[in-house]
Every structure is written in C-alpha cells, then in structure tokens.
Image 1 (cartoon, rainbow, N blue to C red):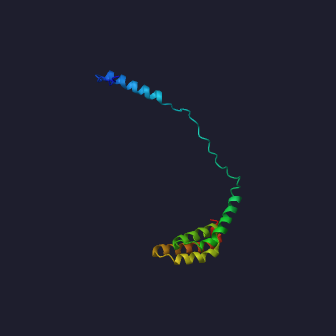
Image 2 (tube, rainbow, N blue to C red):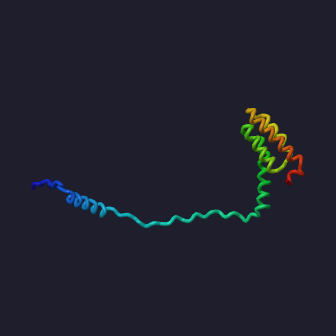
Image 3 (cartoon, helix red, strand yellow):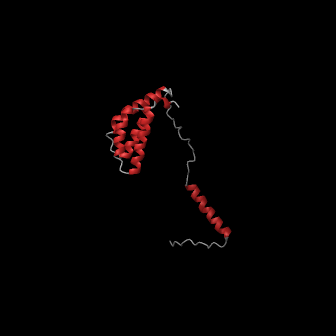
Length: 138
C-alpha cells in the first residue's frame, strides 16, 4: 500500500488565511476547557478593639509601657543620640524628674557637638518646665 503525503494548497488570499485560522482556532477551542466560575474572596475580619475608655484605659496602658520600658533603656545597644531621644520622650510623657540625670549622661556621650549642644539645651528646657509647675497649665 502506497501512502501518499497529504498535499497542502498554498493560501492564496486573506479569506483563505482567515478560514484556516478559524479552523485552527475552533480546534483549539474544542480541546480547551476553562473554569469560568468566579469566587468571591472570603471577607477579612478585622479585629475589633476592646471597648477602651480612651482617657483612662489608654493612660493605664501608657503607664504600663513606660514602666516596662524604663529599665530597658539603659540596656539598649543604641547610639547615645537614640538613647537621649528615648529618655527625652519618657521625660515628656511622664514628667519624671528622675530621668533627667540618665538623659544628661546620654546627652554628654553624643559625639556630634551640634547635636550634643541641642540635647543639652533640651535638658535645660525640660528642667525649666518641670521646675515651674505654674507655667505648665498655660
């Protein structure tokens, strides 16, 4: 039995090309199946904050955090600038005069003279503020 190769005819114009491509496209469509079911993502549940009494409860949390942070500041392995900034934040948050001395030590250890000068001025401002309770209400 003699098998003769299939002969293809050259595509002569755009219409013939369109027919060939349509046939290829139809065969490809017949072989493919797509799942077009669209599912909605599960809604994200955001945690609901506890009913905080903004004034009282948050102030209690702040006191707890400061109490936990204060002994850690000396142990932190950070630059003198960062240590000073931390002490300054604690001083301004608590009006705790016992933090002035460690802040002063941190300020003296700042290498950059202009930054050290600013830190020392900040300490003076805090001392003035804490020393004049009558002006705090203004």
